[in-house]
Amino acid sequence: MSELNISDLYQKKTDEKLVTDANRMPTVPTGAYTLQVTNLAALVGDNEKFPPLYQREHAHLRANLEKDGKRMGAIWFDVSWVDKRNEDGKLDGPAKLWGQAVKALGLMEASVGKCWRR
Image 1 (cartoon, rainbow, N blue to C red):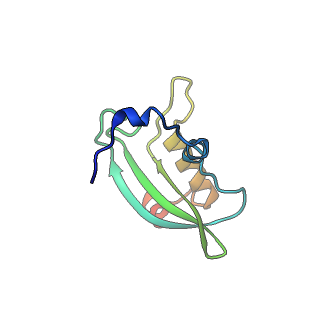
Image 2: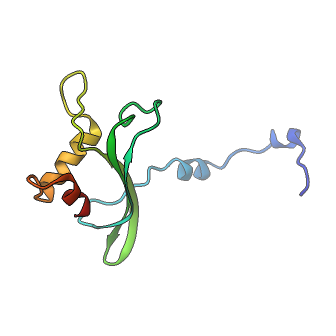
Image 3: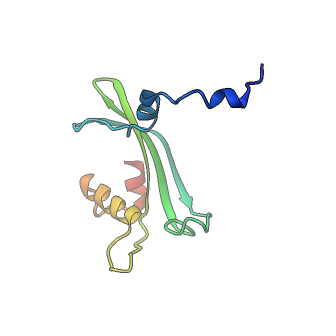
């Protein structure tokens, strides 16, 4: 490997397309997708620097979004069956996502374990 002369770099500009492409928000088009779970873990948060999940039971999910057998993107998120609310009394993100998933899957009377296996 050869070393560059730093003063030569003052004559170079970063390509605008490089910057645009590097900062483009990766999005998946609106539509119906199959969720192919790649990682699902039941955890108790141990990072005190992340208060939403610290000392809280939750699940971390990673999944691929597929359409017609083709991978269109990936998602990951945390959900929690532990009721935690913000200062306004509204559910925080992980609890809200859990509640929405339970309802969408028709598992409102099911145990957390049964929801987990779904």
